[in-house]
Image (cartoon, rainbow, N blue to C red; front, side):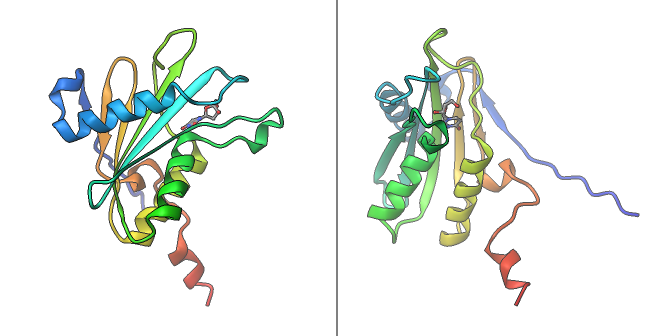
Length: 163
Ligand code: THU
């Protein structure tokens, strides 16, 4: 029997001005697009902004539906839009932020499992880690790769071994 340990590191920042100007700008874009989210059922408005490898910024928000499984998260809205419109540009950084109508800013922001899987697909597609910035109400967390959010993941390499 072997026991393996998986370590991830998360950098935590208390204030926005501790971050680079580029990261601050991206967070502002995510906060703004969160205001336009369509979330009448959960009242949890999420915004996501991506910086692509050439500096282009793309953003998206959650889009809910009365038939709840049909809604889409902010991260996937932004990533799919980026992949559709800029298929040759890798994603450098993704920001996720949220507004809970009762608190105005979400205490804790953490991407759902489906969005983690979609972020990982983009990492594999472009063969480049995506920095992940989680903009919660009381702190900002930065991870150096989306893979840190989903260890032991399923990916395209898993399918190859079936061959
Ligand atoms: N949501 C996101 O947009 N991103 C996440 O990472 C977590 C959840 C959305 C889905 C739904 O519209 C609302 O937040 C409440 O779950």
